[in-house]
Amino acid sequence: MNRNSIRRATTCCLTAAVVLANSSFISHAAISAGAGSLISAAQENQIEDKKVDDKKTDDKKQNNSSTAGITQIFVNSLAPKQEAIDTSIEVVQNEVPVVKTEYDDIAIAQVENYVNVRSIPGEEGEVLGKLYNNSACTVLGVEGEWYKVHSGNVEGYIKSEFLVLGDAELAKSVGHRVADVTTETLNVRADASTEAELLGQVPEGEELSIVEEKDGWVKVAIEEGDGWVSKDFVDCSTHYVVAESKEEEEARLKKEEEERRAAEEAARRAAEEAARRSSESKSSSSSSNSGSSSQSSGGSSEPARSYAPPSGGNGQAVANYACQFVGNPYVWGGTSLTNGADCSGFVMSVYAAFGVGLPHSSSALQGVGYGVSADAMQPGDIVCYSGHVGIYVGNNTIVHASTEATGIKYTSPANYRTIVAVRRIF
Image (cartoon, rainbow, N blue to C red):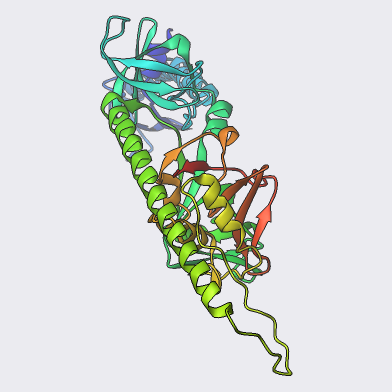
């Protein structure tokens, strides 16, 4: 019997009771639906009188023999069907279910720089966009040596030799697991409990790197260290670098050029303003010192700290200006370089002195200016971390409004935490 016939076997049940008492016979049979006309309804003979003639006795013996024969035929036909059913159950139990993971359809580009996404599965296809090294795409199908893929706003074909498909470890290594803050003020705690010590706070809209996930809690990276937040107050997702369409590439290059020109103009104006202030300061100092002398008033007080105005219009000028505020306080939500600022408020206010408007959000600062690689950082570049941001000052060092305990300070090396992005304004 083949497997298909095994699976089509019909289950049948029979209950039969045969009682022999002197010359009497009683039989009961029941068959579940599907057994067909294999056996008729049970036959019942009742003895009304102990004295019966020989003819009726012979008839009953014949009936006994006939019914017993039918019963034996039914049992014989059920035996192989029951065996078939048992075999079918064993086959089902031995089948191992295939569990699909989120990485099965994800392919990662492994190329020198980028690979073209084409309109048809062939080198003659129109170039629709580019998939850069370690960028991800979803594989929709296979046509010969080509994968049909979707990535970002691009859908087309890439030769399979340039992609690694279904490698979970590779996908995890190039992906960035993040938690977007969805509450006004997110408490980050030292342990996965509402009773644990408060490690720090993060405002709504920030994007935090995920370190670990368990039991409704997420461990995230913030400036104060790695801490736990409830999943009720964040949206978790995996970010990959995706393909860039031809139109997106053209728009990006145009935007970068416009931003460079705007930065050059802002730098020129900042330099002119610095020169004007410097001239006015020298003139005022000369007037106030002519023919006058200072006298002690008997009490001594620490002189107010003075700060040089911004001078120049390049990244080094930004770094020099920012460094003079080291030692000033950190204030959550603040923007004052002297009385207190948080990390993004510090960066925003430093650049504001050079005529550049920036957002008051560490996550939003990841999209300003244009991106450069971490190994190509220059003074003045904005260095972005998970929930934090600083300004690169050279010599593998950043200046930043760190925490309430430390205030505005230097930190080296610049990659003391994982760098998410580096953005250049000048």
